[in-house]
Length: 312
Image 1 (cartoon, helix red, strand yellow):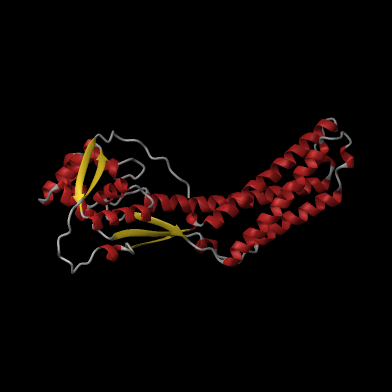
Image 2: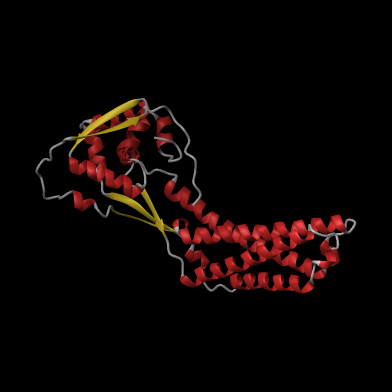
């Protein structure tokens, strides 16, 4: 999925140190690793929302992966052949010696086979590339905490986080409203085991690699056709190869058809990614206590923390 640059906010010039048990500290480290963020970021995220998200890969049907593999192999071969043809045109001005109808017809057949593969693909793309989200419990939570164990743990570890003055003021206001200390508020928030699990193709590395290869080679085919045409104009007094050879003209047209087909597909996938981002990731679902406090004390900061594009 497309990665978005985070927008900067105020400097993190306030420092908060909390004393925790070794078990709790290990739990924070495990959460940091699980969600792929720093421990400080995880703590701050928990202090704002109980629905921190986690992305994981969605598998693609094997027959669709096979289709992608076949298309990838074919367009790679066509791109290589056309680039090789262009290099041959640089060695002579007698281009009729290097342009052969059989060669163009072979490339046409290859590209049309890709188009037919894609058009006749039986998979329901709307279903394959849709995403799903559900609220669930951190899988290792019970490995660290036992609800029946009420014995206090020795607090011999220190966790330090840096926050902006606005964030620190928010922690103080919310803690005061709840009649607990800032430290206790942070610990209580981090003990929340819930998170939002999102399953999406955007995290499927096999698909991303194949899609990138196909896209690059289709662009190489288009570029090679343009270069071949340009070289033909240089050697024929201004005539394009489309005007002189019906088979190349047809090759150029089917290349365009494949390019448009793939472009439409990538736009379709991009729209899915955009919807995923704006519906599940960009907007932070704030805790009610945080939302109520900031509405009264700092409405501008409320807008900032509601948007994950901003640093917190």
